[in-house]
Image 1: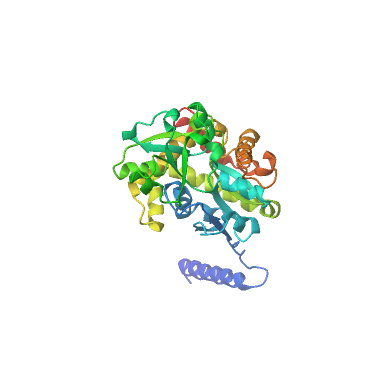
Image 2: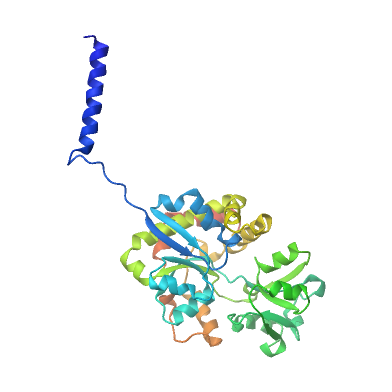
Length: 351
């Protein structure tokens, strides 16, 4: 028998032995750990602000953290925070006013990351009307949703020596504010600075915008949250979710167009260019907050107290709550990625 033939037979024998060993008890290959099925409930039908979550899903960041993620739009007619509070769903994206009301009603939810550390609410009007100072709002009609917090507009009015009695609130259904303003049925609209005014401009209506955060309003914007029980029973899952989400936000900063393209796949009625502009405003105006100087997503007692006070002043809280009950920085502090993202944002421009 030649040397090459002996080597071939030896190799074949080793391969057979390896195959046999894999099915013999005591030699089984380690089973791959199943992915954790996770639901993320977002606060609006998908648009530019949600691009990082869909992009992170497409890039496989959640799967790499052992998470099989499903993103669900808001449920019509139901309090979405209730799904997360019950444990039926694991994570949510919501506005601070809705979150604080839900917490005040006794729901066991906890904010784990601030995605927008400042309120995006504003008062917007036709540029042709030249309303550039709060004092010019006297006697004007403003579109209003019943769930809005009226006390939030007080600092802006006060700077113009006005009160709530000096403007007329026109209660409308969400989604009709741009049509009402375009038709001149209202003079100004309550809007998000990275939302409705841009839509109006795309439709040929140049806008003036007065952002509440520029008038001293300290109020959280968009939050990521979970339920108290999940933090206690499976903190590792919460940590992995925060890591994957932070990676997604960072990747969307590098490729906003590609991130928004993932939103367009699920919301084909959205405009790619418009939603990309919206996302870039969030990245350039909200991410560069002093709150995020050390770690992206970090929260603090002072701003939470201010957020609570605004809702309390407006009579929107059914029971008292403390800032420390609202949030935890445990998972932001536990993810190296949040510090990396803070450095990236700082390097992209002054905070």
